[in-house]
Amino acid sequence: MVTGKPRFSLATVVLDCPDAHTLAAFYGQLLGWEVKFSEPDWVLLRNPEGGTGISFQSEPGYQAPVWPELPEEQQKMLHLDIRVDDLAEAEAYAVAAGATRAVHQPQDDLRVLLDPAGHPFCLFLR
Image (cartoon, rainbow, N blue to C red):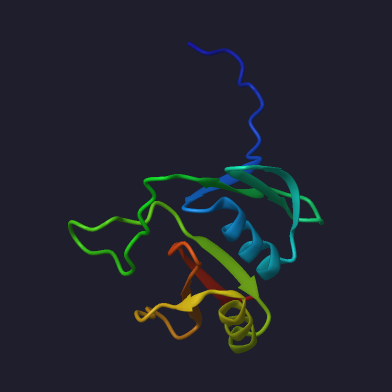
């Protein structure tokens, strides 16, 4: 039996992608976050206000997930939910930064977009 619990703190969520620098540039622009560390195949972004960061790791065999999910196709493993003040304005900004609006939109009060590597992410109102 374990008697004491060690401290755990989620520091970073890592997204695999074909090009870490391209995807980091997209999310850096979208979120206004800063590059804190960079290597040839890995980039770490941090929110200037603190909290959990996002890292991007280049993977040569990366396959973009399919949205909505389909049997026998690459499934998404996670997605990011991003809170916004104005849905239409935020969607337009994200698309101008390089996102694509997903064809399938499951709800009227959020938008599903695909980042440049094909990861779905959701914009929703505060």
